[in-house]
Amino acid sequence: MPETEVDLRRWRILLLSHDVFTTPQAGPVVDWAARHDAGLYQLPLPAHALRPRTPAGRSIPPRVAELREEEAGLGAVFADIASYLSAGYHLLGLAITATTTRTAAGRAWLQRVRRLAAETTGQELTTWVLPALPETLQP
Amino acid sequence: MTPSTEANPATSGETPRRLLIVSHCVLNQNAVVQPLARSAGVMRSAAEWALDAGYEIFQLPCPEFRFAGPHRAGASFDDYNTTAFHSSNARLLDSVIRHLLRYREAGYEIVGGLHVQGSPACDPDTGNWVTDLLDAAAAAGIEIRQLWQLPQTATGEFRSGDSQVSFGDPATRRCYPDDATSLTPAQAERRAALAATRIIGPTLPVNRTGARHA
Image 1 (cartoon, rainbow over the protein chains, first blue to last red):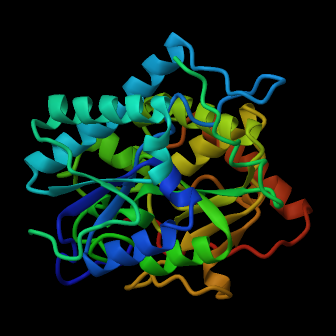
Image 2: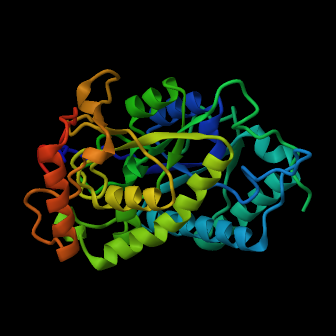
């Protein structure tokens, strides 16, 4: 791969809920990241998302094993983030869609994410509900 | 837990939703070995191409970062063609494939993958990770028919319509670089079988990597 003469990274990472890239918010988030020199890191699919449906159209809640798998996936992401932080990177926060907080399952997922972030990185995860993202950022 | 009453996103609309599998560093150049980053963070042109095409994005984990961390040195196909790296890939892919199946079962069409030309792990032609990904997807019944690539250029600019960004059908992958020295007997056998297929098969438009090693 071609080498660049300077390190182009700006050491900034923004986490995204999985569904940001399935909404019209995706374009503005990419634009925001490009303007703010941030890399984007999509969180894995939550256990409550894309569930099979009952004949009545209601989603079937995740099983314990699926919640454990979700926790393992998030744990791996935040292990990555802890590696980034120890290498001097900045975690800007987490951007989520408004849909995330409309359901009890989504709110519970967000709580789990924030807890894992605190446990593995030692920092509180700043969270923005799209389309709100700060125009100015601290480095 | 209260079941969600949210509409199924993949089937509630008029048109089927299409999912593009994207190598991690396309969206997060912080993950690449230095000095190989080609933007401050997101590779904007590639991300915007995917979104403009109507694709929703599934970002893969970075297999090199997970295996060797942020301070790893540049490496070649052979450096990563190890039991340890492939085992790490298998652990990552276990979850990746289950998630892709959930998307598919929810009605998504998985349109293909966007990877990184010249990367030892993510080159669409010979990357170790891409090979493991496609093998795992095939084993799970997930068909991937098209690959794209960030071109191996200084800027990595992804220009829609540029033949350099479309790799083509993954069935035409070589899987292993011609100069690979680390192949196992099974890999050597597979390479020979793939080469034989190419000799007798039809010619397909494929944009191959020039230099193999990052």
